[in-house]
Length: 200
Image (tube, one colour):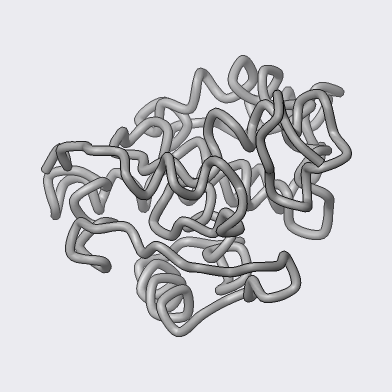
């Protein structure tokens, strides 16, 4: 399947909506913005046990419910705020996942304080350079790797929850730590050849 005459990854080949837009515009693009990184940590945690499209459809609702993912605000959510979120039909109303987001915001702030930014902390695991994989088929793409094990272990040691190695690898794919577009996908080459300046 193609997008405007271009090959795309097989997991979006039959989509002409939200999934395809996300794939074409965001998935695999290196992220150096702390707010976006916190957003993706929260959304990937919310996705656990669900399909990613379920979360994408609720992304705008999540941004409104979680104060546009400002970790300094989320870290200070009260029990009353948690109750409000549990009644918000625009998000996944799972208490453990909501509590996890609040907890992770607090841990996120600690990393910012220690490293200057979460961006600096995260990208040091790959020395600031994305890993460009060369998978031909979707079935070749792993659910986790030794690197996701390492990052997940370190973040869990620092107090993060809902961030096991599988969730971590999905996060890594989403924020461009790894480029897992299939090699015949037009985005694989575009992202791999894109020039950028790490902001740390």
